[in-house]
Image (tube, rainbow, N blue to C red; front, side, top):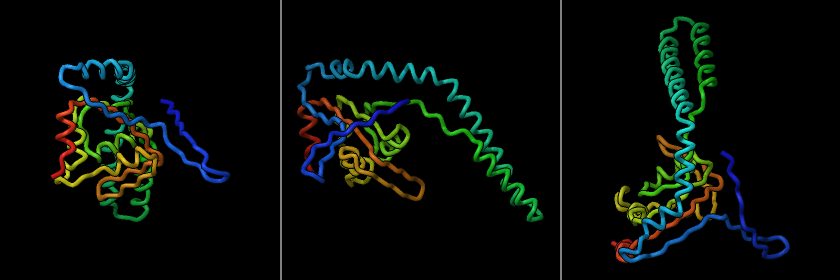
Length: 207
């Protein structure tokens, strides 16, 4: 999938300029019965259709790559067991070289494209989606659950909004944890919400 990247550059002087990514952030409140769900569905209908058609077209290739990766993974595990039991350095080195070759020949994971998120998502999961999809993603929803997640619903009531701030400004982000890494150079997140005023008021309350 080709990803085009655009930025707006506003000159400040001869040497300085201010740069803004073209990521749209929109929040509107609509009363009950205002058909916000229908409006949102109409806005994203073409995106939904493109996602579905592309995922359907890739289904066989995805299944093939998954199968090939599973076979390669088991082959590597078997070679590692053999290497651990090798009686000579030469035998161990030969098996190590086979393991390296298997790893180099393994197909990269084939991930069907996703353009939008319509439900609540953790900050960690959003980071991974940005990594997997060329650092581009959109959150479009007619519910306010995302605000509860941002305020710490799944992180012990500790707000976790770094990925949102970085994806708004297009700043680089590096996450290094024991079991997860995420490197983002210029993430761009578009944010479109249409929710009821009462939900917005509830989300704005501080604990």
